[in-house]
Length: 127
Image (cartoon, rainbow, N blue to C red; front, side):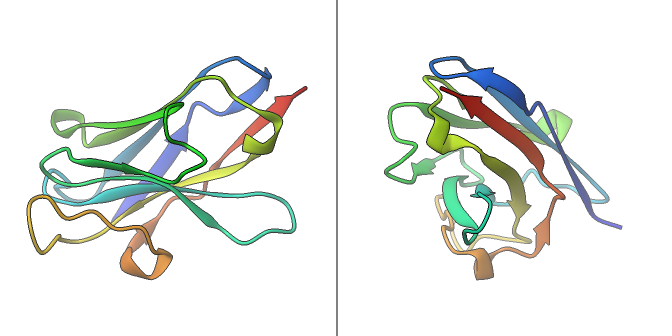
């Protein structure tokens, strides 16, 4: 059974950093495109960052220059390093995995593109 478990969230002040981790189990995710999404109260879930199986990265405009997505295939884990956090980054952060990518460099930015989801980890940034 596939399972994605996020960790690393918490309460921080504006300007601080956090590193989120998503541990995948129940399969080999070394060839899976992965992504991070977030959902703030009263808002729809939105795209944050994605990584292809050959480690190509893509970011939402809100994350560019501040967030870094990476993966450790030996650990079946994907990370999201978040620097210079802002109050508007406050949300539940979810990781997602897709069974396969069409190309080694393929990444995916839409919710419907992903097959598996984690329960999320809360990130709260105070001003």
